[in-house]
Length: 191
Image (tube, rainbow, N blue to C red):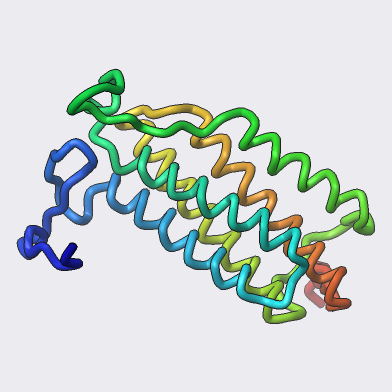
């Protein structure tokens, strides 16, 4: 299989189902941002963190491929039932969302109470996690914009929203595990 097809040389690309759209289409921006997020999660997974976090991040990366497929599918084709010559689009389930919530609850149970906003940083691994959280929020904004135009499975949006929360809690837990200082944001009063 060749990597280059030359079909996108004029600024268009094909969605699942064959429909061609501009490479700046909101659908392409949406799944492209999910792909960017997935790469950031790979970077976090490559750090010296607990194997459990690596395993959860790998599961999340797989779900992000599912989300990418959902977002990359022509909505008219997505409505087709699976079968011969038809698309079989994967879904995000409530159990996928619950996994993120359970992981957050477990990590939060081991962390000191948060009383202030926290400045990103303190350790390179923690910073990578905060960058991924911000990319996740951008992916969510893009996906919501797309959803407003061409709705898709609601649980997809829920998952992306919960994932950004998970990444915030993971950043805090990594700070704790790595003994990195969490710097609280305390607004300074003007003199």
